[in-house]
Image (tube, rainbow, N blue to C red):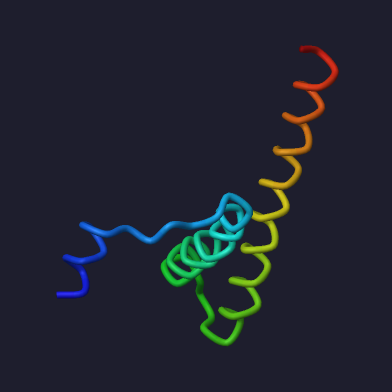
Length: 74
């Protein structure tokens, strides 16, 4: 019943909170990817954390570069 009401009455998310949804997305992708690819389960949490930081850092860097391109050239 809860799933049906979420589709008929969606939750409003403020614009400032939308970017924070990138972190759970990076975490879920890192968990799935590293669980499939790892050879030693003892290193799994460290590899997940490293991949999550790598992906989030790449997204921040890409955002900064695109912001610079937009402000300097447009």
